[in-house]
Amino acid sequence: MARASAYELPTHRPHVMGILNVTPDSFSDGGRHTTVAGALDHARRMIAEGADILDLGGESTRPGSAPVAENEEWARLEPVLDQVIALETPVSIDTYKAEIARRACAAGAAIVNDVWGLQKDPAMADTVAEAGVYVVMMHNRLKADGDIDILDEIDRFFETSMRLADKAGIKREKQILDPGFGFGKTMDQNFRVLNQLETLKKHGLPILAGASRKRMIAAATGGRDMEDRLFGSLAAHLISFMKGAAIVRAHDVGPHVDAARMIEATTLERAPD
Image (cartoon, rainbow, N blue to C red; front, side, top):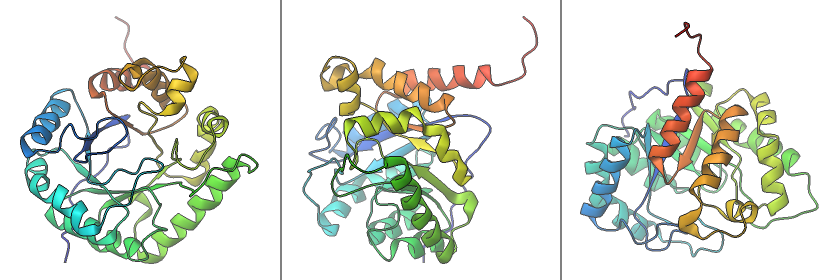
């Protein structure tokens, strides 16, 4: 049986989730942190830069990526999981497979980040409920459709995910929503979601935004290469914070932590200098 996590997500300030992929083929950093030493070095660096959460993934979920078998995903995660958790920064496990989530939560993961919003693996909602952890429920589609109203589609998807979570017994205060930038959306739809991100607050749950280094950044900045998308990513996430996002998921942790602290500073009652 998975042990219940004692972690509680603070809601009084914006958070930065640092990305830690132990995959050979993730779109931005695939292959960079596949050794235990490399993964731990990167985790420590992100913690030193102020990461609130580390999001650990063993399967690339970029559009068009090949699915990874459960045993292969776990073989990538297992050597680093305990050691990353031992660093004492809350760990999110980026998986849509219930068995991977169960094992990670048993080891001490505090969040399950499901890119299919509890709708891919029928056992996922019960697994999260049993573990007593947070869940990020991301909107996704198998294929983009430019003819649909994407915000209406996201609302309906979230309503389904929330019903699944409620039915399984996942407390509302443990549920987080992610609109899924770059997943099953046209470029125009990605920007419409960003432009109207505040409308997702109607669901009453914290919002996570993850636009880091994605193609939408290149599209808006003249086709910049993957390694040259920091400023665009930072701008997208600042917009997200200003429109109500509680968490951003980022590759470049340090600059995003500074941005989050600036947002926090401008939303507090401050005495005159």
